[in-house]
Length: 77
Image (cartoon, rainbow, N blue to C red; front, side, top):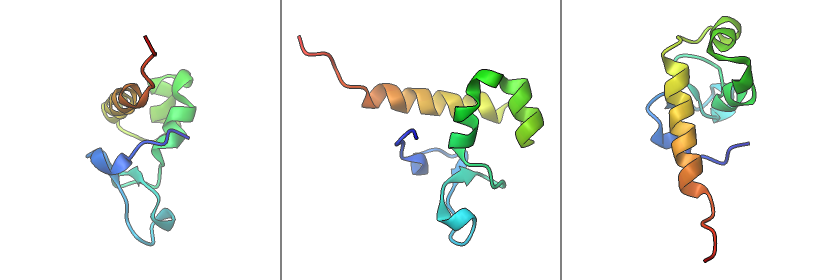
């Protein structure tokens, strides 16, 4: 979905044999894309439905947004 290199995010881990080695939030089986897809539901909804600490979600979104902005094509002048 996002095409981001999650290995640069300290909130994310990749463990061989856990979720087929895809990036997940540390200590969980939740993929960051699962939270991003449901971002519009709000932090309270994400906390309740994914059992993720509320302080982690804004940090994950900030990492995502920062890296998306860095990947955005620059307009030709």
